[in-house]
Image (cartoon, rainbow, N blue to C red; front, side):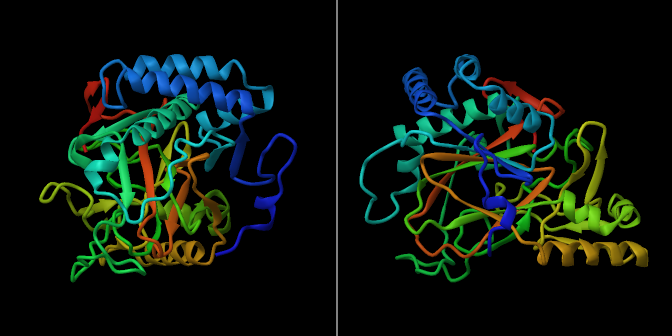
Length: 360
């Protein structure tokens, strides 16, 4: 996959010009301030601790007052849903420890102070764009932080105990086609007893030895190319999806009679789609099937924007405006730290506020 030409031109404000993917470069003073305040917050408890909500808000307030008008404008644009992805770059390294010889046990990474620091840091950056981190009750054991790494096989390099069949999930080394994050029942507001999909997801890399990129596909240009009639067809409930393996066994669901696009008063068209889980129902009208085929072709032929995740950057993807994907993981030492976020527009079914836990 290649960069779009316009996506590699950086202006003096640090933005990716003429692109749905924007960048905020923190200066050294801002990066140091963020690092110091995050370290203080971690000493008071990690992302799952009670009181983290207020600590994150205080750090975000302290950091935002140091931002220049161009940086604040980008924060507001993402907050209002007008940007497909936002990269915070120039952050301090979380750790200067050498790369481990092999990926540590999942429980070890989850409990490490470096992971907690990355989790709090992502929460702060999400708060800057008016998003709040949350967990689903049936996903990832209700934990805010998910470590995304190849513990289940399927990568270029076999694991020591490679499973016979690699599970199709964010943990595996299998290639992931273009998708938004599940669940796929609704995008912004709860429906039929389900909380909506995340409005955003943040990604940063604990380790990414081969600089393997994450790809982002903004959808506004794709929808413009499809035309109004096809977009309206995609808002009809003639689509179905298969259950995600990432949810707790037996608790995820297949879905029928859902749409690919929803119209939302704040976002405009809001997307839910997975190239390897979504299909058109057999009973669908012909013009709906043709619209879905055209959409899938446009996505497959798009030129994604690629970003190499490190400890010194955090990528926030607008989950209702952009797809993301990746190739097969080549290095089993790669480990990402991921958090889900809800925007100021989201209306989930809430079980607890601090930490924020919602019904899946």
